[in-house]
Length: 195
Image 1 (spheres, rainbow, N blue to C red):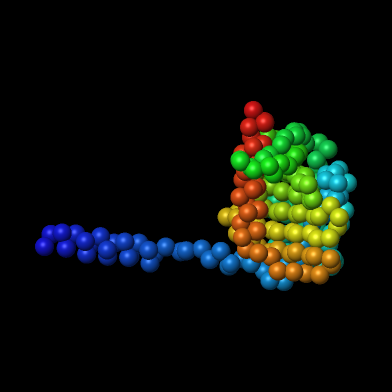
Image 2 (tube, rainbow, N blue to C red; image 1 turned 180 degrees about the vertical axis):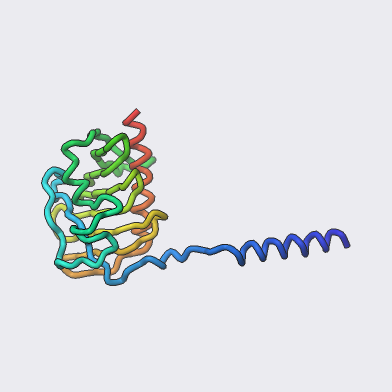
């Protein structure tokens, strides 16, 4: 009898606790009309010479307009300041696999601001505000495709865009998760070379 009473009370408390939680919907902040709002690096990965990738003058992304006071730095501001940042180079590879990439880490006041990674076929740029990953851009070296994604502070996607041969295409959700995972891997690897 006591066991059953304890089980019922435990179940009741657990149910009340779960009902009082405000669970976050990962798609809550996703904007289906999102447009890239940044200046990306050249295809050769040179962070010193950004090229404009905005396709419309009024981007609909969640980043504030150029004239608005930004609560955080925009990707093009980060790229523009890389000349004054501490830069370190490194290499990353998957365990038990032959995939290897090289990357440059740009730090400002000891915090990661940007990582530019070179793969065999593309250049990837990871942007950080106060050390928090929030923006990603990848372009094929041959110019055949490009991918841009904006993340919120939880790593959920605010908006994304992929173009293949100038046409907008669907982005696989697993690919978006891989971007966040790889950003964490690069961050951990970059902390090792900083020591």
